[in-house]
Image: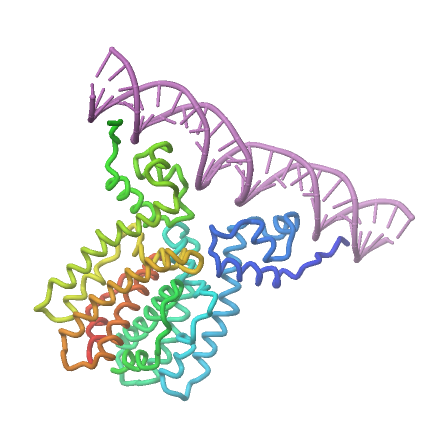
Length: 184
Length: 184
DNA sequence: ACTATTAGGAACCAAATGGTACAAAACAAC
DNA sequence: GTTGTTTTGTACCATTTGGTTCCTAATAGT
């Protein structure tokens, strides 16, 4: 009963996610964003309201694609040693230095945009929970506090590596480091 | 032989550092910056060329004040246990969530501004070196590689905590975590 | 007091910003 | 094919952006 839209919102959102991930919110101009989403202004504002809203939707998109896949990787390897299960978190950094969208969002907008901070924290906690499961399975004799502590260490290491990675630096071997931290 | 300037460049730079530190480069508009520096456009452009240049000078200012002081704190406590020496890195987060300027700069500008990435890496390496000294003194039997590895862990933990802290989260106890990582 | 030189400040500028208005276009239902 | 409804694209808009111009003010040396 009306003109059908010519774009796939999911594809547009993927484009938005990619550019926000790589360049951040402020550094992405509207033309940049429209380009990445394959949209023109008319359709953009009709379908997505405004730039801020799309950024939020991009965080959600990242959550249900990249993060979900990472968490699934971590969950899946139930049988193996902990450091192997956690390896996905310490895979080689992408050469474009886009880093981790969660980390980028926290640092750029955390202090000033509570809604962004909330989403980022929620995602970080998804990661934390997955790590806790691995640590718990790895040595069931650990106390609850110890599990939480070690998982928190791994989570902080993950974010630290992502942050440092954005400035380039030299890639390091991480299996030794992981094993060191996981050792009770 | 000419009109003397009415402002102290060091004070102006301090103001610039504070606002860039808290808000980042892109989110700080020129009026914001002028306000923070206590300058008007005329003096600003005459004395500091442009916004980018001031950002670089702000990184330098941070290097020679905040970072130098932190490194000095770490160096000074030669006698004590390692986790005490490293405590300055894990002091309570500032409530304004400004975080660590080095971390902020890496994340916001690392991928696109090589000069910023260089400065940030140089500062991160100053920190790394200070940490290595502590780790080395703590247990002289460690191999050179082991010292580097543990110091790198601490450095990554530091940046991870600063990044996560920007989104608020709950403050955690860190002495246990530090001791865990420092244990050979 | 005069001059040379620099600082300060306001007016100004082009370009880019995010966002809106609206008419043309494409369909579904009848 | 006509009508009703929604999408699409363009032209437009006010505001803000970082930066420049240029005139006045203040000083030091003579």
